[in-house]
Length: 491
Image 1 (cartoon, helix red, strand yellow):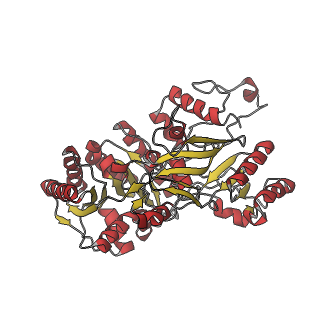
Image 2 (cartoon, one colour; image 1 turned 180 degrees about the vertical axis):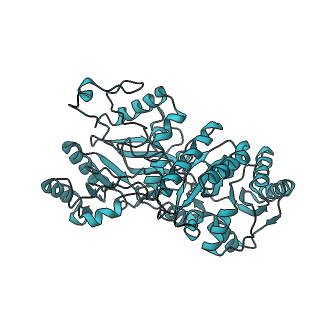
Image 3 (cartoon, helix red, strand yellow; image 1 turned 60 degrees about the vertical axis):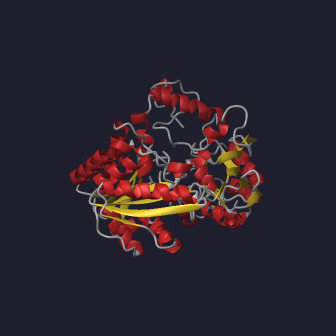
């Protein structure tokens, strides 16, 4: 999927016009520098962009999009490049629109609990900025130290605490968006329930296919009075899964409840030095709220964990130890580098009641493929993150790992789940959309995209399993006679 070239496929005079908008330093066309932008965090998908443009303001985004429209060029918006589904995979003959320079916090309204930010603001920086006032921003992806709000909006990012507080879509009140024709629209605003169609709901999670987000209005929350954390170890994922079911069935809604299997624990220990024992599985759980509430729910959750067969339940001695526990969990993906040269991370969802049988099926798939699979996931909402470990130096292993990861997604769908919980569809999961949705479903989704982008120029080739143009009729694609004769092709 790699694209190599000695120079940009765009004409020099056109490149000069983009440079005139954003400045020469922010217009990248040197082949070696373009390599930086060939992929997001899913490095097995690569394509060299035709041109990288880094605007510094909403006005510059408008001018770039209008020039791209006039030139008939596709546009791929990009945040920090931390996505894990190939959502920011460039178009070889298009514009990669990087929004990392747009990182201003524009307004904060503590009385009404909202703030307005540009898309390049880093997720964790928001909570740091709000901390002294007793507020924070709830969605906390594992990459929150580097991922940006624009990318979070595109992918509807979640994180460990989405069980209680919801995903990005639950915290976006409004957005300013530059459409494919260069027009600017405002969807929603600084209110919880604006009038009219919920177009902000359509925008969040649309993976850059509807437009370029240039401002976001976010909901901010008061910090809870207290948080209690526990770390419980188990002989296997069966007992850990049973503990999750008991806790949730009792009506307890943890702020977060994360599970790691033995292989994940081995990697995390190697990478971070946490003093976790060698066990079959572990749960890391937060409960928050008023002091009386958290003391009660933490005690109940501990009781259920022991009832399910916990070997040990640890409570952090202080805030520093709690932070260490969570740093261990959030470093899980990166930690795989300590035990494997390469890995593919997947992101499927299953009903909580299916955790144990699905993990056994994943173990069978690993055995059949002769590969190791580590499991880290948001156990409370059944969001799995299986990490298929492989060695790219061994011929055929990368393709085998990717096929095995795809089989895991099919298992998720068969058990009543989904092919993605928070990483998005992008280029990686597009082939599996048809396992979950009918032709009519996909055609309806495409109609929404076409309402925003009739020429399908925004992030083309993502989400949909086959190229879909806005003139396509719903249902299976039937080639036109000119295509059959070799006189024409689809974009």
